[in-house]
Length: 219
Image (cartoon, rainbow, N blue to C red; front, side, top):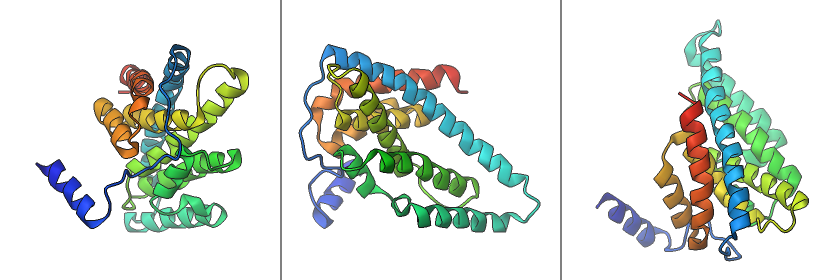
């Protein structure tokens, strides 16, 4: 009932379209592509472990600072501002960035920027105790990483059947599955937020690999 009410309210107040529309419909992946997406899931799962551990390390680092805790958010805000000055796309919620990543509108340089600089500003912001979300930054980082990995796979294995938009989609879902351990949620979220039902097999393969990598390695 809560989900129905929320969805109906969104449709009434905003629109009935998906959150992250994709310009080109994704095709059902081949068996070979599924293998590559599974391997990609293992890597993204390890990335999710690193992201989670670094967040806790930064939080512990702020607790050791010889200043009052009320000043921590000022440091976090300063870092976010400096990073945002040089990389404006790292500021804000970032839904436009996610849509651009899924549609392949960003260059390799911008993908690297979002993957690394967005992570820096986000992890310092969280570690400083500043109010902020985790979903959109994780999706941005995972989507950018997935697109970059998909590009590398296509460069070395052009007949793999992997596509950059699909790699971006499964990348953002896999990092969410690995970091949050919300396996089914990460898959359903990707399907409903894009409307791309043909991505189901690739999502199952990648999120399963990422989930179990996180499950067996991280506490």
